[in-house]
Image (cartoon, rainbow, N blue to C red; front, side, top):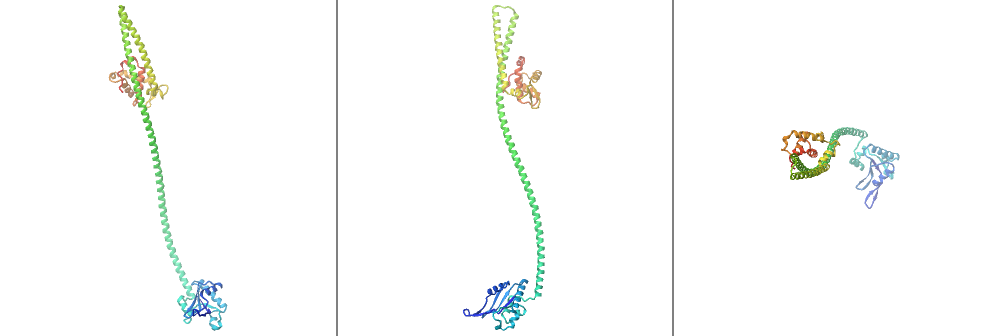
Length: 392
């Protein structure tokens, strides 16, 4: 701290006290001289403002150096402490004196600034200040060392937590990627299943449509088979009548010449035979046309001629080629050896049984095709030995 003295005061009749330059005015003058005071305090007593004021520059070394510079400034102008004490009051004039507060000022009990110094400051020597600063510095270094150690521990703990958090985050990200991959796979499976279900539904609809068409075609086929069998029965009946008429003619020719009545009967039989033969030819033509028409429109035609080679081969479920002419010959041989079946099964049932024995798990259309092929190629004796129709 720096003591300012001889701050001239005058009596103010309004306030009844002595007043001089206030603390702001004093601070401005010091600032103009290039000093940086922190605080200026004008000292007062019961009479008013005294001629003394205290300038504070701070307790650090910068403040001490500023106070020393201000004291030297006053000394250079012969306004230092010695100058103040050596001059009588009337010789001091209105000049402002100043000096750095020391021990004798601190312990001055006669002037007002002594009490202010004791109340607001500490008396320290330079060596004591240096020792105090050294202690503070050591304390600061020790505190900083402890702080640094604590910060290092905190850093290590934070680094450890960061490492744990990083590992956990890596694990979570890996799990997330695995979950996303699993989710994508499940979505892909679901989509594939949906596509498979849609395809299966489409296939089922197609199968139902084909089954419906097959059912309709089968009904048409059975109807045609009935028509062919009726035509075949009519043809067989005509053939039987023709054979009977021919037998009668042979008998009459064997007897020789007879009377006129017998000759008329013979001529009538011949005429009847001719009519039956013509009718038989018509039945054969009708039957042949029905067979040809059925071959073009029936399941037999699709199996035998529709999607197979020109050699009339068909691939059965066991991938064995079927040649229908060979099949028919084998059926005839098998049919002749299995006479025990006659009278017990219809021709259609025989065809079914033969196809199963011949090619294994054959489709029903194969047996139907064989039966129609047999109807087309069978002889009179085979038709005569054929048992009744198959019931549908």
